[in-house]
Image 1: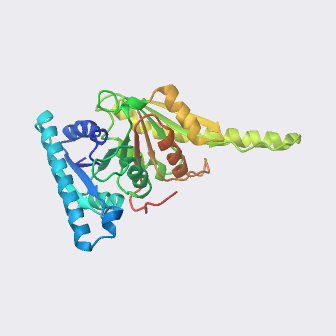
Image 2: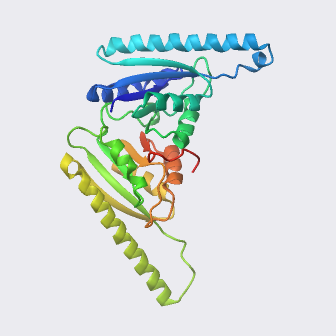
Length: 311
């Protein structure tokens, strides 16, 4: 890991992403790039004014963003003198500007809190996170509000227990490579989970049909378990404790959220796309529900070369 991008919107809440970012950066001797984006669409009163006045407003807002980032940089260096911090003030559509900057810098990770409100641009950072989840090709680490029961890992260090939803596809395994530099250097716990979709039972008294359906479900469950056991072997050399879980249910996301809650995981890591031949549903739609329902941070990754778009 060489570069981490932290989008900031002027709020103290958004700045909470800097703690975990500093930890990761120190561990990997990486750079942290802070970025703020000013909308190129001025307020309504100015939008109807002459173009020179609107341009002046945008430039003033950009300078304010730059001054803010410089202040954050100095404040952060006061707490972490050895940190490698850079900052960027951009103008344009927020999500596209962050995407473009991430590509230009060739960052390895984008870290941000899932909501917050800026003092100048008045945009919810949560909506930006939502759009980046669908569009960005770079991995995202979405952090939660500590006061809402989430937290930024324990003591802002590496996650101790990670839940990894898998659907049997190579695309879903993309997140495993991204997760490696975030896991503790030694130890830690990982739960690999797959959800076997349970179809709505047919109202039938025909015994052969019922028996056949039960046999197929049992066979698919064994197939999934074998798959998870194979994936689990990848962690054996790192001293990671691995547990595998095959869930059966109609709502994959709800099942995964229940596992996360009961196991008290402090990170959910998943790919935002992937379709398994054994599970028959898109992990992308599950990711959407997990982002909205999880109480802990989420690490998301997309297979290189895939176009970011709505699932």
